[in-house]
Length: 304
Image (tube, rainbow, N blue to C red; front, side, top):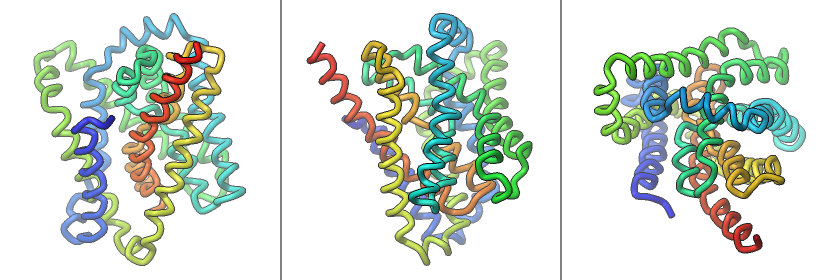
């Protein structure tokens, strides 16, 4: 079931999105800040991740992680892009972006809640976060080609800046002022809520006119997000079909619990309104995947 904090997060995300669309004047004050605020969100998220544990765990399941990373960052986003380009081209780019983004930094919590392989999910978070600043810009340039005039190095620089600066900052602070990190951990959730709200208001106030003229876009994006969530669930399970159920569920979490807030910021820098909207609507399957994964685990354990 949802925790109270999960429901609060959903309320904050959607109410701030609506506020940005309905009150674009006041909300436009926040337009310069989403990039920097996303870096701070990742800084807060990386507080509970220790890199030395990641390297130890990586040495145990290196081939599994390599396979899942290739699927998550290359094969699956390319496949989803071509599928959407053939059947629903308006959402092909947005589907590529959210499919090719890194595993979300809260995925280890989802994993522990579902009793999956925490260590596998943790490694996927760190490795995909480090690789995505190279893989996603490359996919955009290769698959979209001349249809978009976006610098590959510009995209790579932006994602690298957003991801690596917070990661390095956490490691520096952990060695120099560890007490400060402990204090930040205590207020991480309310701080993150405020930042999510400001990011959404800053991003969606830019597209307020578009949404007022095309309100059906939000409904369409919600349906597409749910469909993509189902695809990620299925691919994640199939990718680890021969593995124990703990690893199957961890694989599905790694595919489906994505860093959608990062896509909102990235897409708002380089693309139009549809791409960040789909990323925002993905918050529904982000948490909704918990229920089919829990049911799948029960079925598999019952049949074992």
